[in-house]
Each structure stands twice: as C-alpha cells, then as structure tokens.
Length: 263
Ligand code: 6GU
Image (cartoon, rainbow, N blue to C red; front, side):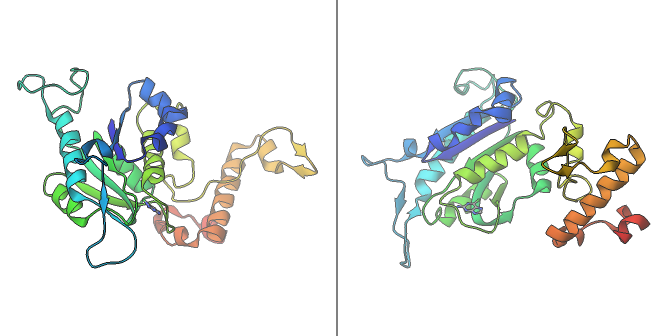
C-alpha cells in the first residue's frame, strides 16, 4: 500500500518511522511519502491560509494551494512505465502506477473512524491524507477532488485537535497493522477489542500468579480450555456492557448464545 501525507508540519509524522509502521515500510509492505504543503505555495511568504469569507475567528486554508498539491501527488502515481511521462521519484514503477488514490481528510466534522473503516482503507492500494490546520480547508478543495477521486472525511473522536496530523498517524497505524504480514501473528487481529464479535477484550494476565496480594483468576491456571474460553467471553461481555453499552446494542443477536444473555 502507498500512503502520501500532505501537511505544513512534516516533522509531526516522524513516528511513522518507528515500531510496526516503520517495520512495514522497511519490509516493503508500506510506501509512505510525507510532503510539505508549503512547497505548493506560490508567494514569497509561502502562504497557505487566508481570512474566512463571512468573517469570524481564525484562518482558512487556501483551495488553490491544496488543489495543486493534490494534483501533483496524484500525478506522481498515475504515470505508467511506457507512456513517455516521467516515472515518479526514483523512476521505478510501483504497484500503484496507473491507479488513483482515495483522499482521506481528517476533520472533527468527518465520519467517525472505526475498525470497519480501518478494514475498508486497508483494502485500498493508495491513500492520500490532507492534513488541515487552523479552521479547516476551503470546502471547494474536497468538492473538486471528489470530481476525480473517492474522498472520505474522517474524525477520530468527539474532541478537537489542532490539526489532522495526529489523526492521520492514528489512521495509518490502525490500517497498517491490517496489511498482510505486518502483525506477526494474524490471530492477534481476531481476538482483540473491536474484533469480529464487536466486544471489548477480556482482561489478560501473566506471571507471577500472585502479585501485591492480587491473584490471577483460578480458571486461567486450570488448564481447562473450554472453561477458559467461557470465562473470557463472559468477562468481555461484562466489560463491554459496563463500559460501552453502545457496542452491546450493535451485536448481532445471532452471535449470542443462552449463556451470553445470562451474563
Ligand atoms: Cl480528524 N481532526 C481534528 N483537527 N480534530 C479532531 C479530529 C480530526 N478527530 C477528532 N478531533
């Protein structure tokens, strides 16, 4: 998968070098390119924002600068090896050549980003993130982009961040770990919170069996796989009902057995 991030703070995306996402990049599963939006500004001061029409506080990011940036990023992956156009960057054809990306715009007014959305994004060959700052990007940028490519505006939760960069980090990490070969053991993608059952994860324990007067639940030491599985499901259900009743309402009734309903 290819990921482009356009931002006025490229350094904010430095964590993409680290950990699992960094490993995916080095393994060649993920091709991440971070761009400084100001490279597309056309004045001496490299201006990317202006005052809002209609008045009000703050500044709005200019559609022309964003439009040029997106055009160039899209074009960098659209060249094919034999069409006579310059091949992007290193001149090496990449799997996304000839394809068009999905534009992802992080914004508190977007669709809520969740695990289902992460799976949808993970099925795309190429994502371009447009990270806005200030009061947002002129609406015409997204309207214009949507005439050519699919666009999703996403919010990572009901709170306000200063810009889309941290949200882009969140989305890239959630998506990258779903790519084949990134997470070592694919089983760990199934049993975790927001996995197939839509439940929060059960509590986990390791050695020692007793610590500061707190004991590991006996059933986990019993070696009885059936009882362990039942206990874990009960704990997941209890925890979800307590902390996230909204998730309980969304469980498919077909997936609940009589014992579940008693919990
Ligand atoms: Cl995606 N962007 C900003 N600026 N704030 C947010 C957000 C995104 N999601 C929640 N708050």
